[in-house]
Image (cartoon, rainbow, N blue to C red):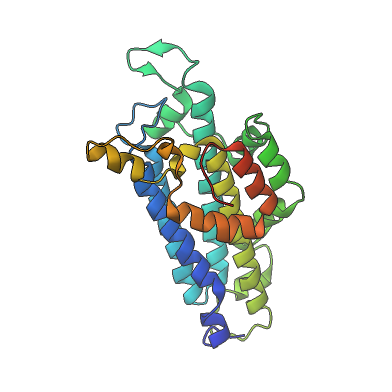
Length: 268
């Protein structure tokens, strides 16, 4: 397959990348109203994380359209890392911000707050991943996500491309060369992309399900009206869309666990 082939240029991976990027942009706007408890940040730090992720997904789309699948996979690894950092920082804040020593600034989770202000690095990927997978809060979701070794394989594929572990990966950055496996590699990249998105969405729901709230509740307050009962649990339409058409479609067991464990009013 060549990059100029319509089969490549019209591959569904480009549609998925656009959908996921738009989701993160909308989520970034939606979470801005929530304070990042346990830090001294004035604004919600996840707003900037999510817009950054949206930018990474747009970059993946750009390099894929240029036929550079190898670079696409290197950026996919960056996306994977970003989701783990986001999950780890939010889980750590949940676990620590109200138990650490009270300072003049309030209850501060030092590790994340120092990272936020450029005073320290977060732990390496392996440590963060182990922390997430050992969390009692996430036990059910972890059991479902890691029922097989799919995510280890995703990580291995990303590393193989980032480090040129195989010559075939080098060739995947040469857009004008005919490669019989180019289409299969793009198929796999799409599956890996979707898997990372599902993992991230499942974790965000499990840690901060209020992030998925629709804007109706605040709209009522801004109009000096009493919000309808339980309207704080209404789900934003863009969230319901990816829940139905990505999570429920491809990981129904994870969707069912989230639906039963969340306060948010997800439709069946």
